[in-house]
Structure formats: C-alpha cells, structure tokens
Length: 77
Image (spheres, rainbow, N blue to C red):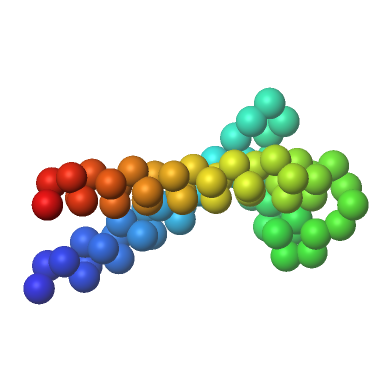
C-alpha cells in the first residue's frame, strides 16, 4: 500500500526538477518567462531558447533515464 504515494511523490519531484532545468542555463529564465513561453509560445528569444534547446534536452534526459532504469530492472530480473 505504500507504493502509490511513493510513485506519486517521485513523479512530482521529477516534474519539479524538469521545470527547474528549463530555467537554468547561460541565459537565466525566471518562472514568469517560462510560464509565458510555455502557455503562449511566440517568436521571442525566450520561446526559442525554451522550445528549441531546453525542452527537448529535458525531455530526452527523462526518456534516457527511463531507459536506463528499465535496463537496470531487466538485468536484475
């Protein structure tokens, strides 16, 4: 019975880490800029940085991490 709360907690932590990674970089983006670029993507520099560089990088990191976790679980049997 303790697995669903743990899984929910880990999912929330993953989501928060991904959001934090979207704002960290050589050009710092604050939360309001990120939210505006996520909700209404335009042609500004913030939207370009978010949609062309940081969001694909964060998504790929999550996918690769899930793959590594699945491979580790498969090896353990």
